[in-house]
Length: 273
Image (cartoon, rainbow, N blue to C red):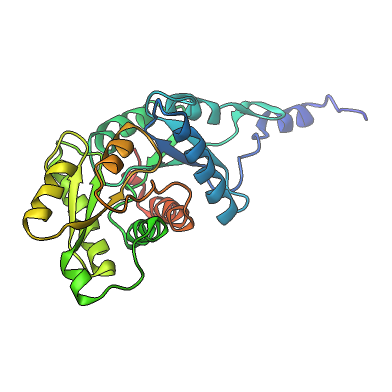
């Protein structure tokens, strides 16, 4: 093949723009991170579930701390040159979906700060809760653990659920957890009391004692955690009856992740981190 060295041909080559990346921006699942080895296995399974529900979407994983890949490293990898175009990044943007269930310090500060220093344009989606799909996932995990599909009126009067969450000093976080508790209570037809593993009150044991004082001694603990870990284990160990597993790769949770991704894409550009 002969390449022309004419001025017109050289000018055309000089003005040619590199190809732009195509397709939707990658979805980055933002997990907290845990020293429990089961946590990474669980969030990887959720990552696979999201890929199954949205074939062709680039779904990545980044952690706030404790586990690799850390979120800044994942974002840096998105800026790697595209094959054959050394001056062009593979992608120009991404949507970060926190695997967290209410607004708190990580959602409001840590993740946006990491996004702001990313080499690609990164939007931060809303946390997963509160949302009816989250209540659906919590309900399903309770049912798997032994929560009955039907109750008599007498059983209902002595039954309740403690919604165990991580906890935060941010009052907006507690508001979000209470809304999730109300959504779950509407599904179950019994009281659902939010409680926390740290940084907020009541704790799970305190909520259990309060319910027992009200005659509710048939109490289950719902796990508002993505994956196994220290907090999830402590809350489950306190359960006097049914203790639900963490939410993991439940299909409804994967649908919620994609819903938050779509919401972030549809939001005005000013909402980007």
